[in-house]
Image (tube, rainbow, N blue to C red; front, side, top):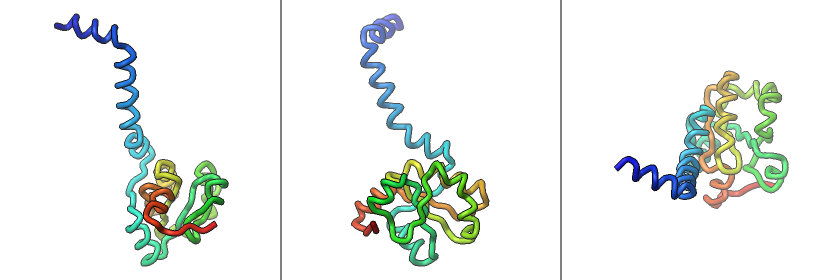
Length: 142
């Protein structure tokens, strides 16, 4: 029986490769979230409550062009690649909750982990990012 499996695999290398790649693509967002130490994600509704009830800071980590196309009201803009260098700008906000938003929710996890390493205790990623915010029909500023 075992030789039949090897013959199948040899004759269907492309099919096996497609299965492996698609499996990796399905698991990749989870791996990124776990590796980045992203921590807690908040739904759009939970994020709105955090902003309204606890005066949370919204940190938009998208690039400048994405930010200019529309952002959450009063969001502070620091691109994900610059957060480490510009962390001092946020030091005075360590006592407030921070909601990190990117386009779709994948870049926010690494930024959350970086903020936690630098002493921020309440850091959350916006689930679905700004795209999720728009899908919930919530407004963006330009």
